[in-house]
Amino acid sequence: MIHNSKICLVIHNLNIDLTTSMQVTGMCPDEITMVIVLSACADLGALELGKWLESYVERKSITKSEKLCNAMIDMFAKCGDVDRAVKIFREMETRTIVSWTSVIVGLAMHGRGLEAVSLFDEMVEQGVEPDDVAFVGVLYACSHSGLVDKGHYYFKTMENRFNIVPKIEHYGCMVDMLSRAGLVKEAVEFVGAMPVEPNQVIWRSIVTACNARGELRLGESVAKELIKSEPMHESNYVLLSNIYAKLMRWEKKRKVREMMGVKGMRKIPGSTMIEMNNEMYEFVAGDKSHDKYKEIYEMVDEMGKEIKRAGYVAATSQVLLDIDEEDKEDALYRHSEKLAIAFALLSTPPGTPIRIVKNLRVCEDCHSATKFISKVYAREIVVRDRNRFHHFKNGLCSCGDFW
Image (tube, rainbow, N blue to C red):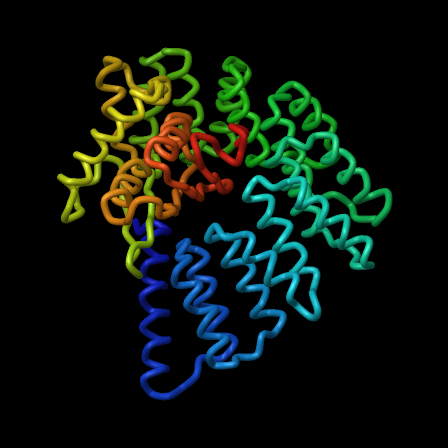
């Protein structure tokens, strides 16, 4: 199976080769070509390439249509420079609902929920009527910033003021918001009162919240029901496996993993991508494929020693194996994001920001370790995971440990 990151790398190379060929032959890429390449940059998190494309648009005087500006907003937001995305948005002569929604979601992804809801209010004040997608954006912003009261307000406003009947996506945002805020029982009650049948995504949000908040028995019950309804969805088994690990029921965890093997399923491996000198590098846990893997692992060991001196304590509960604590720490140090950060520390001058893209949700230990790394090595570290962005600086994270 080819991972999404591999596909992105192929698209990346094809797009850059195409753009280069067009320049050599004297052809200027049109709006459609630029939108496609910007989209590839957004998927990869290739900020430097995205910046070059923006300057190329300026140099070649390519018309900045609404569609092209929206693509640039999306690219900068997804590549970690949401301030640049906002600037482009503010410079647009005319804006579509897509423009507004792109910036609202971009701010939400970066944990700037109050700015996102403020922009939503500004949009309404300017007479731009929000659609159902815009409401997904503002509810997403509330979810990722713990704005529970505002989330309830916008959810009610959607139907009462704008006559938009909530869809499953809106209900999903509300359940996610309550779950992330630790209101697990309220989230379950909300699901029970929904006028539509909850989908599996909603139930997985509940299980994830149960795991994070210690409601393990409830999480186990829901996860078992998920497996019954979706017997071929590997994430259901992973969720149940994680709960058994938290409960230290290793035999049950082993049986769940064996069941996955019998059905031909496996857990999606964590991987981290980083852009360096116009090249994209990908790391997986325990990776030794890089030419400089020995130096990278030496740097990982140094990082571990330095952050321990600064007060870091490994979250060994994140290692879902029945092994010694020392072995668990060693396993944590080999996570893909730590390898990527070590590579960046070796490859860039002191003080240079580090930007990485993780294909899964960043784990609790890597989140804690990255805070310490940002302080010890005086680096700003921007991490884009499956759910959102984390901006680490001086030992703190922009998410406020809420993700």
